[in-house]
Length: 427
Image 1 (cartoon, rainbow, N blue to C red):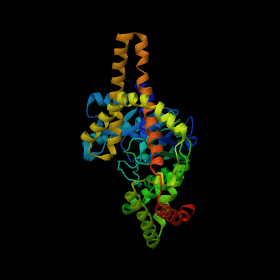
Image 2 (tube, rainbow, N blue to C red; image 1 turned 120 degrees about the vertical axis):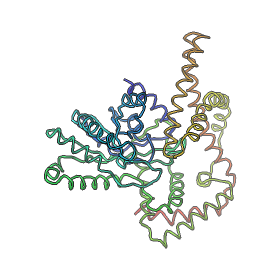
Image 3 (cartoon, rainbow, N blue to C red; image 1 turned 180 degrees about the horizontal axis):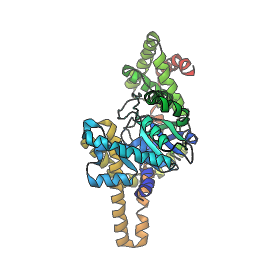
Image 4 (cartoon, rainbow, N blue to C red; image 1 turned 90 degrees about the vertical axis):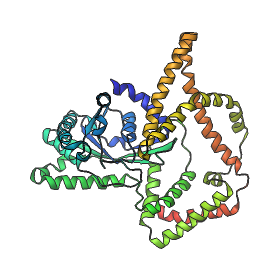
């Protein structure tokens, strides 16, 4: 019950933190069959939470066993469909032996046609790269296939990509690959299990690499991120609602950009970097941003009417809601050192704080005005959503208006960089 109670609340929380969640290829997840979703792991907790909120089926997870050390948290996580997986260096040999029980429990779930998620890299790191894939996915899949030889077990590679996972109102791109069938490896597994595990894991890694934005060299990260920004600027803005879209065009664009830089010879990459750096330095001097340069516009009467008429509800929504987000953000920064965990903690703490806050508002409203006061409490989050919408629109529109005169040099530098690079992306 707890899973289904928390799920819609978490969906609102994640739908607020992320401006857009792109989900492409969901139709590749087989129905009425045991499925393992094997995903990469660039952040802590966010990937399984997002999938649990937006998939049309319950999801079961394997998470780090150390989190189950306290009985209360262990019970809570089990109620949220989480099961522990232990590592010897963290929990000792006896705890690792308990993994066989968990493996059998997950295999049973797959045999019953349920969907299990495994973070295939085994650990999390805040980077746009794919780390070596562990054999845990293959072991679970073959174990389930052995226990239920008359049923097909599928593994669906899932690429999870973020624009900036640690930033509020960033975006997520999740790509579901075509499923891998265990039956295609069954004969090999019966004859040579180690080879079957190795080849299956290799295919999974190759499939995942196709669905992950990969910047191969750390020294290329700044260049690629700047190219991402410039190409995002030229895309038409998606509407505020709905939060989730079945669209892979953003992923394909960013994948193509990263791949083009990865494959570029050093001389051409050096020339590209010089052009992009020159534009970026000129931007810093001008005080403008890329959007203002590319999308110079004048505000019409409709823009000003919205900004004027919406100012009072914006202030109310901001004052009644912002301190919750501020407190969650500050707590995540002060208590969590690793960047991979900061967004997860901020979302979780913010969701908990806000639920308590909303309940207090409902109680106070009920004491003062009865049922009308209870219902009035729900105006507060609605004002919060309006304040968020107003803030984003105001910031974008004022960026246009601030660029009263865009120096021609800036436009020329931008055009030179984009024209130099576009053929590589197109190819």
